[in-house]
Length: 284
Image (tube, rainbow, N blue to C red; front, side, top):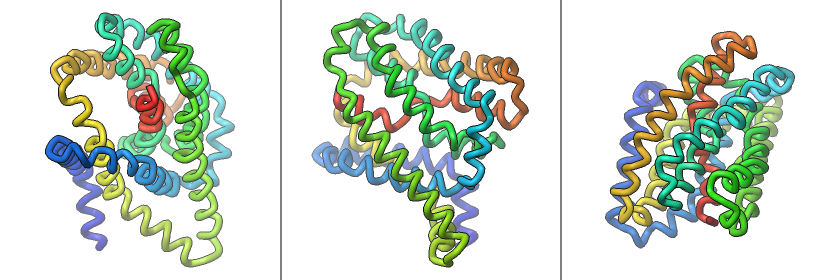
């Protein structure tokens, strides 16, 4: 078993790409299965985030929350600098409201789940990022409708339903975080909890590989007729990544962050499309 874990940890990026391809194949070949996959999105995300939160000692969250410079840097980068970049890029698809809305939902919503794992692979201070999801999620809930109104127009604001967003925050952040904290507390006292932590840590890559095809298979058939028009957004996403890396480094320097914290800031600014935004997108 240790050899298998070592193998999939080493090759996790190709495995994730293969999982994405599998989801696309299933979704395109069996479109009738999309509703079932859609129902599975929240459960698989809850398990994935539970495992993610278990991977970082929650006893250090208090220290991360006291790092005001880090959280201030994330806030400035994600909710002041990013919207300016996104507005400029989104003007290239402003003629198509559906594409415009999609670009805004993808780029305005900072990732709060996968970013913890991927930043850890890059040697970032991912324990500090663990303290950020509740803050980033709350700010998304408050500011995303505001930015959509400014960038799309007031007509869209009337159809936005925040209830799915609030539900996603509770199910995908609060519940897994609370369960992870409880598990870690129990792990210091009882052996079964320690075994659960060990198993979830070992299954991190398979859980990610399960989540990716579920999400893709649930949505790809619904958008395949628009794939040609969707190609227009790819250059925008590439440009966004190119621009956000130096902007993330600049923000980190302004807030006098060390190298691991700078990496965490860069990842937070460049990593987009939080999956917890999916319920809001489906509601729209």
